[in-house]
Image 1: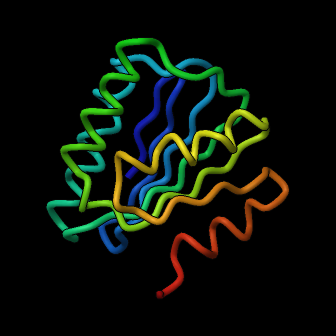
Image 2: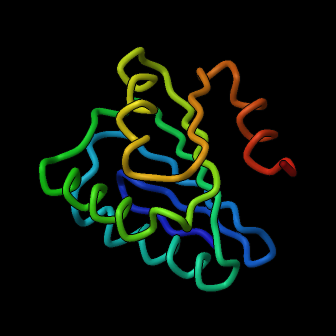
Length: 126
């Protein structure tokens, strides 16, 4: 299944617990209203999820979106197994450290040139 807005594109499959979220621009609270239900549907189906968060020309979060992200992290602290973050800027790499208090997931950053490695890691068995 695929859902898309100007900022967010979400790709899921009922056969897998992996969700791919592609973002560009600046995330808003309304963007969370688009992809959080998709994540929660996969959690309901599979018990846990793995998130591939692909940032291209990403400019961060609006204030209300940061709050939505924190709430999601606490609500689903144990529901996310892995988060692969693919980015293009040094500050995006630093976001992996910011995420750690809000999730039990294994969070890793991959530079754009490592996209294939990120895609392999997010689906591989432990």
